[in-house]
Image (tube, rainbow, N blue to C red):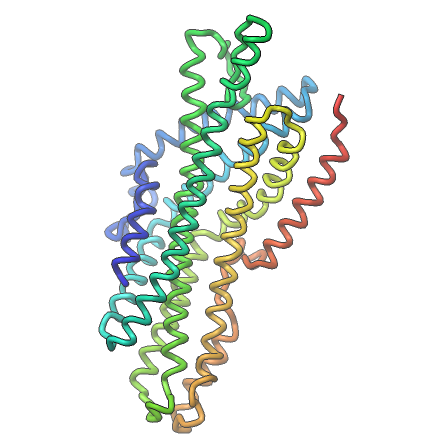
Amino acid sequence: MLEQFDRCLKSVNLYLKFLGLHLESKDTNRTFVERSRSHRLYFAHLFSLNLEVVAQVLWVLEAVITGKSFVEITRLIPCLILCLISNFKTLSLLYYGRHNNEFIVTMRSLLLNQMQVEEKEHRFRKNLIDKHVLILTSISKKISYVIVLGLLMFALAPAFIIIPHYFKTDEVKLEMPFIAYYPFNEFDLRIYPWVYFHQVYSAVIAMIMVYGPDCFFFTCCTFIHIQFSLLNNDMERIVTEETPRYDKTKFKKLAVRHIELMRCVNLLEKIFSKSILFNALTSSVIICVTGFNVLVVDNIVMMASFTAFLIFGLMQIFLYCYYGDTIMRSSMEVSTSIYNSLWYNIPAADMKGSLIAIIRAQKPCALTANGFFKMNLSAFASILSKSWSYFALLKTMYHPE
């Protein structure tokens, strides 16, 4: 069981180490400033990415002042928001490094304490963990494919514009993957390759900065859900027909496990709640603007690029809501599991502990957008509804020439 958790963390660390970040269990007592000193590569990436962000913001300001095309402005908005999200997510992960490590240590401890079980029980636990880890791995692969496809499309888009234009007019008209304002002529042949490379590199860094923390979040949620499922199974079997005798010591251990799991959810809430809020607030804008670009862009490569972007945006916010919903449901099932046991065979003097556990479990453990709303499937439906409203408004405002 512990091996699967470590393997999943290793996958997360692959993304984070590329950025110059990593999950360290020895890092618990260091301050944010001390941790920052050991992440110079990350800050180099961050500085480089934000140079591109500044260039994009300057272009948007110039576009608004000079009255440039509405479609051109909407083309840049999703990219700009994604860059801001990438800043927010990675800085949050670095700032809450102590909580990251506390979560990892607690989860490892929970997994280690469940190693000594009967063969039949061990098989059940292993199958449950393998099932959920397989789902997590499958999701990670699919998101990776979408990211790679989107990056390739954006990187190759200039070639698919330059080459047809050359054959039509015998003129080489250079294009960039992303629109930005530079204080020099970026289409000068001596400068163009460097600016082109920097834009592609910035796009890769931005996507990894978004997906690295997301991958950590999905891994944490998966193992919290697994632990709640195992706890529910154990609670249901605390008093059964096969073991009608109540084991008070065993129940105390299960109660401690429940408390530790609630603490894990609270740690995850501290680490991600602010970035979830920013993500949730901007998701509606990203989805509607990207969908609008898919509809109005006449270049097939750009259309494919924005389609990949749209799929990624939908998958990302859906998974945040799905995992939040999963944790809420599995945490509430603890009370049902206790009720499904032969609780009436528990001695009256010991029944108070079971009642307290039932009452506490009826209040779900929830991941929120910084306390404003709970992340569940209802929140996802609300985000989609807002996205559709914004999309309809954009279509109404758009008047093609």
